[in-house]
Length: 321
Image (tube, rainbow, N blue to C red; front, side, top):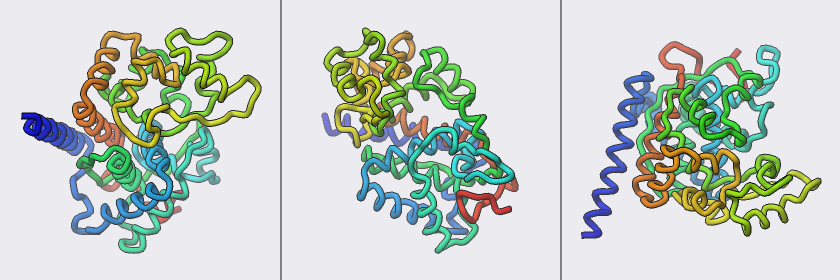
């Protein structure tokens, strides 16, 4: 009976992710197996390079997922996050918020270019690398369509008006996701990515000083205060105090225990609809996997460029011109 229930749960996961893929494909003009005839080994090549990188450094899974999130929320999923400063762009997105993984994406692009020059966009590489990072860090995978084209503009100014802040309250979070046509379900599901990765002390010490946020577990607050004392360097802390390199529903259990870092994390428990989804995800890891996969696909379809729009960059950090 238990085996059958697990099988049904897995089928549910696959069906939800597949349905999300179909919705994204039809609404954004993307296609499953987009490179099947033009670069049949593209996805396998991305996966091989990503797997090797995460084997060498497990924290890279969080870096790839975060890069996709930042790319898609700012000017759409067009690889604008990867562009270096130039005369045309001035200060690009990457100058606004420090992120890891730019050199890693360039290595993936070089590997793909070696087998299929000028075929695979950097925007698709970001989406595929994030998907493959989920497979390595969480142990499940899902279909994701391709066909994105690369943008030719990037602006640091647009970052701060687009990226949800760690200091947001629940309504601000809901509004920021709605601005990208994402739902409350997507907000809570994707927040599970905070089960991996790291954060700087400056992103959460507002919950420690001048007074401790009462929603923080006192023992956890004491640990954070010891790591991030006032006046010290802006150190980094694991997003999750439990299994920090394993992507899972542990984030929701952390939230219910008062052991999450950000104001925005704790805010999910201050609204009935978001709190109900936190509780549901904490209770059922397989259902959370399905929701997370579906929401990743929807996020990777935000304001994409397809067809004759944009370009396929030769190098991810610079436009072709």
